[in-house]
Amino acid sequence: MIWTNAALADGPRARLAAGVAAGGHRLVVSAQASASVLAAGGEDALLAGADVAFGQPDAAACRRLERLKWIALTSAGYTRYDNEETKMALRDRGAVMTNASSVFAEPCAQHALAMMLALSRRLPDAVAEQRGAREWKYFENRAASRLLNGQTVLLLSYGAIARRLVELLAPFGMKIYCLRRRTYSEAGVHVIAEEKLSAVLPLADHVVNILPENEETLGYVNARRLALVKPGAYFYNLGRGPTVDEGALIRALESGRLGGAYLDVFATEPLPPSSALWTAPNCWLTPHTAGGRNDQDDALTDLLLGNLAKFSAGDAGAMRDRVY
Image (cartoon, rainbow, N blue to C red; front, side, top):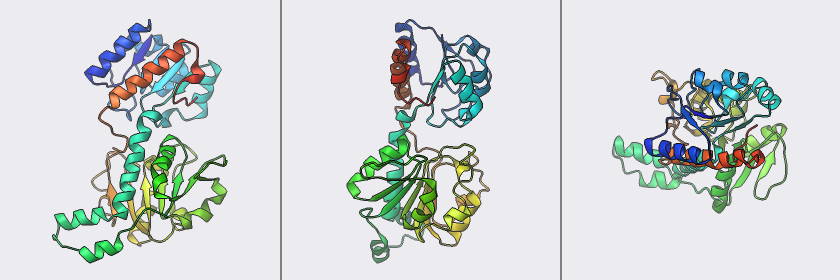
C-alpha cells in the first residue's frame, strides 16, 4: 500500500493514482494533506498499513513503523529525518528514503544564477530608481556594472543544486570553489574541505550558501566567517535559514563589508514583518520560492512513479535521489 499526504493538483493526483494502480498497488490518501512540500504532516493512523510513504510523513512514525520500507519525500530538504535515530531505524529494517532533489535542483540553480546576474548588472538599483525618484543614473550604473566572467564563486555545499549551478556558470569562465566534507578532483571545480575555507572566503566575489540544516550546520555562516569574506562580496542563501546567523549578516550589510545579499530562506518562515532583513541595506528577499516551478506536481509524480517501478522490481539501488 502506498500512503500519501502530498497536496497534488487534480491532474497529477489522478495520474499518480492510475500509475500506482497499473503497478498493482493501492493508493491511500491521507485526510491531513501537507500544506506544502516544506510543511510536516501530522500523525495519521492510515500510515501504519503502508509500505511506501509519499509526501511529508511524520518523522517519529517513520522511525516506529516496521512495515514502512520506503519514504519518498516531496522536498529536496530532509531536516526532520536527518538524524542518527532515523538513519538507524531505516537501516535496521532495510528501508530506503528518497528526496526530490532532481525536481528542485534546476529551478534553484536558475534562481541563484538570476540573483548573481541581477546584482552584477545592477538591476535592483535600476528598479529602485524607477519606483522611487525616477532618476536616470546612466553613468553611475554603467560604471558599477560588472561581468560574471573571471569572477570567483564559493559554493557552500556540493549537492544536486550546486552541481547544476556549476553547469550554468560554466560559460562565464568563473573560478569555482565548492565546500564538501570529502575532497576530490573534478574538472572545472576546486573542491575544498572545511580547513581550507578560511583561505578561500577572502577570494570569493560571490558566496552561495546551499547548506542543509542539521546539527553541524546551525549558524555555520557566522560573524567570524563573514569577517573573512572579501570586502564588497555578495552573499546568497538558498540552503536553509538556520544555517546563517541573521544578526551577523545584518551587521555585515550595515557595515558595508558585504556588497549585498540575496536571501530565499530564513530562520523563521514566513519572515516576520518586524525582521530587520526587510530593510537591511542592499538586501533583497524572495519568499522561499527558489525551488518554484509551475510543473512541480507533475515532476514529483513522474519521480515517484519512476522510482516505484525500480522499487517494485527490487532494484532500490537504481532509484533516483536516494538519501538513505
